[in-house]
Length: 637
Image 1 (cartoon, rainbow, N blue to C red):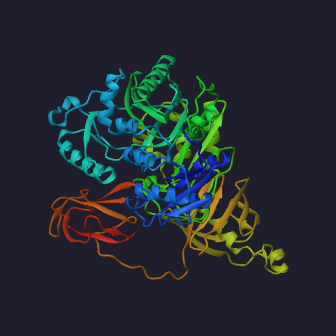
Image 2 (cartoon, rainbow, N blue to C red):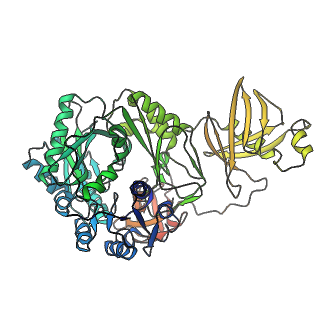
Image 3 (spheres, rainbow, N blue to C red):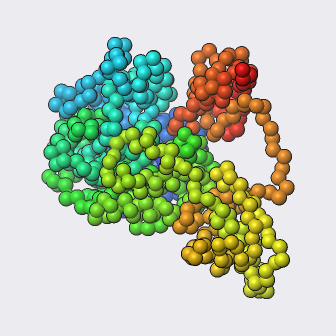
C-alpha cells in the first residue's frame, strides 16, 4: 500500500513551485523548497515551510542535480517529491532514484517517462497504437517536394533544437545548429525531420490516469499562439473543433496513455491542419504550464489529484462536466520588438487587477536574474463564453502596473484584441504575420511626460501647509521645463501648474495626476523607482516608462565603431566556424550565439567588412554591454 504523504519537496522553482505549495498547504502538507544561490530569497523559498540550498547558480549545478535534490528531501524529512515542469520532471532516472530512496514520486512511472522521452521512439509507439502521425523525412534524401521541413530535437521541448527549413541549401547548417542547441539544452544531439505544416494549430488533450485503470481525457486546449515555438496564449476548450475531431483527439490521447500504462497527469499534443486532420506530436509526461485553463473549465485542482493518485486513490469513472471558457497569457520579462530579448533587473511593481487568477514566482521588489526562464506570471480568466474570457483577460492585463522591466504585456493585450484571435482564426504563424504591427511604438508619451513632470513638481505630503495649499495656485511667469526619454524618443515638457494647450490640470499629487485632456478626464498614476532613474506612468491611454534627462548629463563612454556589445548577460554557446581576427564577414551574418534565460540569441555582423577583434570564446560568461567583437566596415564603392 502506498504510504500517505505528509511532507512534500518541490524539485523546482518560480511560479510552479509556488503554485504546488499552495495546494499542498490547502491539503495540510508540510512543504520543502530547494533553491540555487540566486534564488535564496525567491518567492518560492518564502512560500515554503523549509528550504534547502543547492550551491551554485547554473541549472546544471543546482535544479538539475537529482542527487542533491534527493539528499535535500531526506535531510528535510520530506516523504514525497513533486518535479513541477522542466528541469527533472521528465527524467526517468531521477524518478527511479526518488523511488529507490523510499520517497513517493508525484508523476508517472519511470517506464512511461522513458517510453515518451524520445520523440522518435514515442512516435513509433503511437504508430503501433493506431494514433495518426506525420511521416518522417530523411534529411539525407530530402527533395524540394518535401519542403518546408521542421527539424526537432528528439529529446527536446520548449522550442529548443527546432528549426524550419524552406531551402535545401540551408538544411545542412540548420541540422548542425539544431543538434548543437539540443546537446546544450538536453545533452542529446539527436534531431529528426518531418513536414512543416503551414498555418497548423497546436491542440492538446490533458489526461489524468490512476493505478486502477481509469484514464480521463479532460477536454482540449489550443496553444497555437507561440513565439520561437514556445507558447504565449493558451485556452480551453480549443475553439472551433468539430465534435468528431474533438472525440478523435480524446480517443487518441487515452490510447497514448494506455499504451504506456500511464499514471498521473500528462498531456498529449497534436498538430491540427487547416482541413481538420490531426497528427500526434508528443506526450509530455508531467504537468503543463497551461494546466490552469483546464482546472478553471473543469473545476479541478490537478496538483491535488496528482497527489491523491500518487497515494493510490482511485479516480471516479468519469470526470466532471466542463463549464465556460478559460484563457491564459504568459507574461514575460522580454522585449518582443527586439527579437524577444529577455530582460533582467528589479521588478519594482507587479499589480494585476480584475477577477483573474495569477500564478507567479515574483512580487514587487524581486530581481529577475539571467539564469532562468523570463516568465513573470501566468494570468488566467474564466467566463461563461470565450468572448467574455478574452475580454476580461485583456482588460486585466491592460490595467496592470508592471514597473522596472520591459515585458510582453502590450503584445498580449494586442493579441487578445486582434480580430483574428477574436474570430478564433488560430494557427502557429500568427506572430509571423502580425508581430510588426503588434510591437509598434506605444502612443505618444507626451501627455504621460507632462503628468510625470507635474507629479515631480507637486509638494510632498509632509511639506509645509502653505506649500501644499498654494503650490498650484500661484502661476509662475515662466513655464517650467523637464525632459524625458521613452522608447528612444525624447520629450521636452514646458508646463505651468494649471494651464497647458488642450489640457487642464484638475489635481497633481506625487503619485496621482488628474488631467482633462481634450475635454476628457484622465487619471495618471505616477511612480518612481527607488533611485529616481525611471518614472512609470500608467493610465487608460497606456503604460509608459520615462527616463528623466539630467540637466547636465555626464559624458557618455564611446565605443569603437563596429563594436558588438552583449545585449544581455549570458553565456557564449557558439562562435561561427573559422571566425578569427582578419575574417571577412557580411552584413547580417551570425557571428556568435549567446544563451540567456533559456533562450539562444544570435549576434549578427552589423555590416560587411573585416573582423578586427574577437573577445568571445565558447563557454564564456559575459555581462551586459561586454565587448564581444569588432567589425571594421569595408569602404562603400
